[in-house]
Length: 259
Image (cartoon, rainbow, N blue to C red):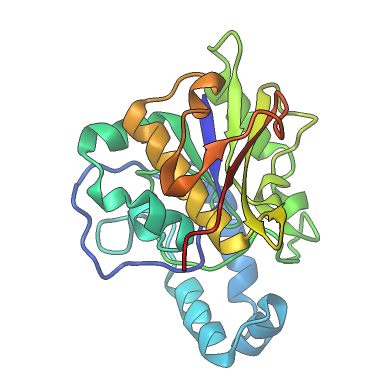
């Protein structure tokens, strides 16, 4: 199985990585094209395009200017250790062993507006470019068009040796849209995390993000290899609900924590 996660807006380049192992990102040529389009924009244009404050726009304009197609220990950090949002705080990759991160390297793909697909140990330079951004290039009017079938083709390559390939979707709707389902050959299983609120089970964004990270942690720690094995996930009070689930949609529900 391959697992998909979204990236995070928040980044941590201040904390040193706890291991040296790394790989180079896969789509550097495409990233370079996107950086060129971003460098052509003023901080004010970036603020408008991405709906950012002036301070964040200035920070990211500086990141684009500093970005290099050469990745080194001085300008980069392993992606799974650099991302620092809700998903990645729950995943807590900095406490995983080298062996566990090796397993993640072989089973996890992080979707990215700038990098296309990142493996956990791929070196990554700091950036902000959400997949839903309407960044126009010479080839496309937005990032979905820019990436086209490239991400699905890569996932097909990764799963080509498996007789019954499965992709476990733990990504957001915005990011999973970058995977061309018509081109994708593997079965897709999506995990949904709901909480009881006002008498109804609902997806609560913050809690769902955290649950995705916890699920990925569970998969790494237990080296999950089948869809059935996902059903054992029970972190943070979540329990698999077979009645609410379907073969390709696994629903996990929980009661809200006591006040």
